[in-house]
Image (cartoon, helix red, strand yellow):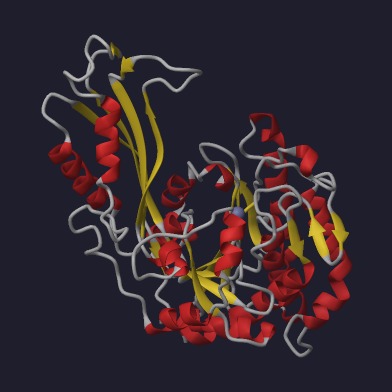
Amino acid sequence: MPRDLLLTDYVDAEGQRIVDSLFEWLRIPSISADPDHSASVRHSAEFAADLLRDAGMEHAQVVETGGAPAVYADWLHAGPSAPTALVYGHHDVQPVDPLDEWALPPFEPALVDGECRARGAVDDKGQLLFQIEAARGLLQRHGRLPVNLKFLIEGEEEVGSPHFEDLLHEQLERLSCDVVVVSDTTMWGPQVPSTCVGLRGLVAFDLTIRTAAGDLHSGSFGGSLPNSAHVAADLVSSLHDGDGRVALPGFYDDVRPLTEAEQRSLRLLPFDEDEWKRKAGVARLEGEAGRTTLERVWTRPTCEVVGITAGYGGEGMKTVVPGRANVKVTFRLVPDQDPERVAEVFGAWLAARVPEGVSLEAEQVGSVGPALTDPDHPSVGALCRAIERVWGRAPLLTREGGSGPEEALGRVLEAPVLYLGVGLPDDRYHAPDERMVMDQFWKGLIAAGELWGEVARAHG
Ligand SMILES: [Zn+2]
């Protein structure tokens, strides 16, 4: 751990109190998916507001939403020419089942081999606490922060942030900022620091194909009329071409090429294909021709059939021509694809393929835009310098294949989103024995302390 950074002494002096505080927060079972835990989610929000108040942040309060409560606090005394940063994280956690696969009870945090074990340790209370403690340390040691700082802590991230965008719009003025910092992501490895610059978006469809009013006897009718399962299979098989590319016309037109810095990072990341296969439990990899696995999951759009239902799937055999089939399809999107435009193109593509006399209904059931932070933005440079100072190596640029509330943050607040995440790929997110490697936690705290000065300098 580097010795000469702003918060090194603070960590030495306050380490035990910080761990106690982390444990206390982790003991609150704030599972947002379970209505029986709503009192705990509220308790967790109140606890976070207290942490922020104790840290010296002002206006710390629980903020009501249409669902579980969020938390807000700010410190706005850096002066009018200083930039304003907003830290985002979430205080709710995933459910804990299967409970019998936990080595230790999920809400009784413990330190084991330098790891904090508990539900929420890395996702996301631990990653938020290092941000809160960095602000506390700077205020305690220096009496001020180099930036105007705001915190927004959500209580529904683990259930898909259903009220988050409304909250952003309702509180737009109070949340306005020059840069958003998210601490809810991972690094490539403890020796390979990295920062995320983009997330894929998503648009999903539920397709219902009807060839008849109901299932028909395959002896009496089979061979004389359309079969809904065959129609579904035809549609599914024509979604991709022979090169594994999505066959919708113009599907790739809006895909933004990677910057030089991103291409370089993709080349430098130590990626083990066999390990990837082992983790996935598969014997072979496939996808868009001419692309590496990381390119495919981070930087390229996809179409996946997530479910097909038709006809009889029970014991033995049933002699029917199925009259109805259901296909669920998701598209993962990358910058600058627009979910609504993809929806239009997909609708037209389907309409052109359905045989006459067959009915097809396509219902759109979800849509999130892709998110991208320009890797050449000066605040990304500021973040990279802060990380390099602590980890001793400049971070590589990564992306995430999934989607999250970060897209709404960047779009609604019109600010670049930076990712100071210290989670590791083996931290067992959403799984039994979730952990936070404490060395990463302390480094995150010290990096957060370095970050604000860098952001202020990059802004000026
Ligand atoms: Zn999270």
